[in-house]
Amino acid sequence: MYSLARPLLFSLDAERAHGLTLSALDTAYRTGTTPLLAARSAPLPTNVFGLRFPNPVGLAAGLDKNGDHIDALFALGFGFVEIGTITPRPQEGNPKPRLFRLPEQQAIINRMGFNNAGVDALVRNVERSRRRTGLLGINIGKNKDTPNENAFDDYQHCLQKVYPLADYITVNISSPNTAGLRELQEETALRQLISQLRDSQEALAAQHGRRVPMLVKVAPDLSDRDIDAAARVLGELNVDGVIATNTTIDRSLIAGNKLASEAGGLSGAPLLSQSTLVLRRLRARLPESVPLIGVGGILSGADAVAKMAAGAALVQCYSGLIFRGPALVHECVEAIRRRREAPSRGAVAPL
Image (cartoon, rainbow, N blue to C red; front, side):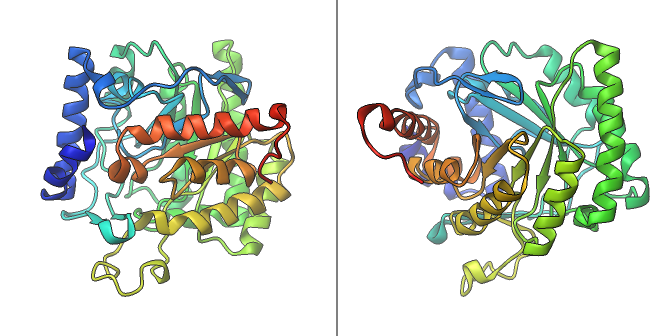
């Protein structure tokens, strides 16, 4: 069905189409017609971060910033859904237009700027959701007018608010659409922020009698030296996991496209190679006790398997859904299932 709807959606402004698609998913969920959109896979249990995921394919943050559509998104067959990025106070984000499709390259440019209704609105939405299947991640950030020297206050505020509701929490310091945010990935700033948040995490675990994993999401544009430094810091601080990667500001990947001059983060097919290189380097330098989620450029089951082969324990999709529709979820689950089963049939698993 998505292949029929896509030409109409692509004829609309990208942000309007985004809203209409989510509304349609809600309607399908309420009316029980979600199975018409895509086949659901049999469970493929995956244990990561001390959690049991129904399958290893998740939705990346950004699609449902406020947690307005949690149940409808889980109905598509995701093993986990990550909502956000959320900030302490509501903010409108950057001026429109701020979302652009590049169909020729199966890519998207966005400069949304953490537009969201604030953490209290997200908490209310999560409390209303049914969440009968899958695990919920909540992605937290800082308000754009909060200086980096006060960033911890914003992250801690969100951490405390969402802690009782999340299965895991992601610290987003890698979006290119909030001025100065990526500076928090610099070694000294990263150590200071994540060290403070790890202390808060452990205090909250004692308070709630439940330890919620905390992950850090990094950019694909880090130099090899910066990747090594980040791995060293995150490994020493014993974070629960790392998500590799966010969107890129590199425009060499879409050279010649008329939209290449638009500011914002580039996602989709052009990001696959670079994000996977970062993933592979992180895997080689992080302790084995720190699992990785691979995200960036997954538009097929083969892409998902490539992330697993590079060291990911789980994968996430976002832009691929725009171009492939919900069928991508099932395709990725089944490709990973075949990879797991290959050794038992005497085949050689991908390296």
